Length: 464
Image (cartoon, rainbow, N blue to C red; front, side, top):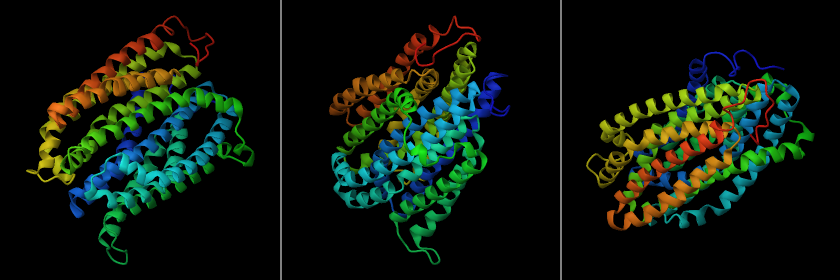
């Protein structure tokens, strides 16, 4: 079936379509981030600074798995967007069914493997002794529901790939509201609920993820019966698997490179003690909120570009990128200024006492890094187009060079003399290197190959 008018991103006013499609993704991501933000606020107020430190360490492990999941599902989303633009229901339905079954199998394997390796990972991260035991239990429980989170992500990606970015937002809203209700009930033992302290936050997230996963799967089955897998779909189609691998492996590696780099930097921060760990945990939450609009628009840009390629509307690619850069950079500038001005009250909400050592370290981070966030926003917009054209290898290359070739080596060198300030300065330099490389690869792989193509020409996405 052809794409519906509501899901058509291949015609009409580009900035209006971009806002219509991107804003629900942004709102959904903000709500999704509410999982961790709500937990951090409750943990900071009820458990204290060590609780915030536990979540910082645990999140570095969980984010590794989540980014692998996002890499796999984002690749599927690009393929689904392209097939949606082409308007052919047969390969579209088959791709969705195969994606769901592959996600289930991979998610179960990663869940089991990560639980088995959890204690070893905490040691590798040089988790401070004061919070090691607490972090171990929290991590195992958090990981046990990973496969449900994985399935939820892929279902939402399928919906977005077909042009529906609103429905995933509502499922995410439902999950975070449930999480916010369960947090105080399970942490403080209100009414007939047991008092679980820090572990109550993990249980609240686990139950909320399960409810969202079940609801989204039931919705997909009712609204799109052609997407629902059968027994035969558990036998992978080799052609589709190869296509997913061609786009998805670099995508997954890019996210894994970033997540592993985050774990490495977390371990470096942990060398400076529990105060630095707690400060890094709080600033990480704030940073996620600041760069989330750019990340969300980057995802939207990639799907819009992919859908336009499926419809052979190549002439729209440059305009999509230009408007994406405008929206991402403008929003990030505003949020960065707000973070600098209101740093202390925001950090206090995350559990850091205003005059504590943690707060002092965290404020220094914001002052040094926040001015560079708009530069990183530029990269997210450019990488959206690069990924949308199927050139995910080059986004991976940018991540590898800027993080492992520049930021991490500089972290080791500068932290020797400047301590944590050296880590923050290395972060800023890493952001600039990502933007510079992004501009180069955008020109190389998205401007040169497409500039002479006309809408009526045939085109192979994987090899422009």
